[in-house]
Image (cartoon, rainbow, N blue to C red; front, side):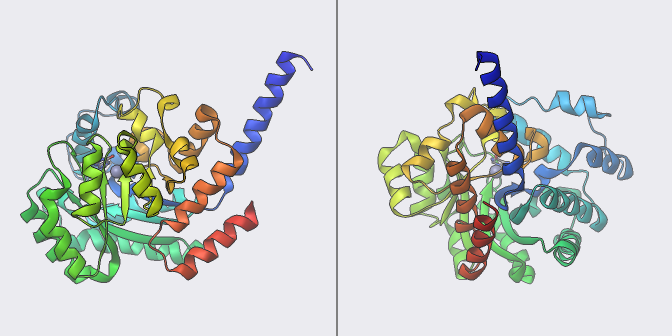
Length: 347
Ligand code: HPA
Ligand code: ZN
């Protein structure tokens, strides 16, 4: 066979692999609902709610989403979320994402909801929840979509604000499985939120936190030892601390890794530098996720495709990653087994 025939057959194999990947039953465990706000919906809601944005068409949005670090993204992310005002807006935000889940074979999703983002616009907890819950109920009834919600707090705000929000959420206690911590990591260490996590534990929430995305490996240790999280969002900076990697392996602590996010926020210059598959091969419970798909140029399948095309992920690695998504979830053991069975039947 000639070199060009070899290259062609390799391309065909990759395309087949990608088609197979797209249909694997998957779980997504790291998804900020505001990060799934689609550009068309953003423009529509800005017009409806009379919110002035620095962009007026899709091209201008695409040009603006050119981030240099986490903060430059967060500025536009909170601006985007400021267009959400009434129950119907929240319904469509959730429904757009859940429809994407159906298209991409994301059979289970654990979705981060950040009420503090909406309070400055005068949106009430109840308004947001009514919209979200209506969409989740409909998606579950219509195509069996499985969803758990995570109550996520903004770490750039004082701990007292987070605690007041936790207390507001008491009315919706059964709607959330866990609490999380997002927003600007540098300068806002996990140990700023020890009281919040203690109060959430007393209320029976599971605990997760963003750590080791832009912040150091020490923030991952703090999350584990002081906030007692059972799962870490991002966590990629663990590679700087060999003892920490061994701890994650021994204790089966999952990391919710977001490859496209890490490139778009300049955590790595190129995907080739991303340690995801090395960590997976060493036995860390790595999962693949999209984080903020409409800001970072891809939903969950596109993240899997990036691993295939840019890191040469094997079929075996893809299956382990998908399996880890269910294992690392907050579903009951019975539900986990049922999804893993579905995954193996497909594979
Ligand atoms: N990191 C921290 N906060 C966030 C992110 C992220 O990647 N996405 C949305 N909020
Ligand atoms: Zn995130």
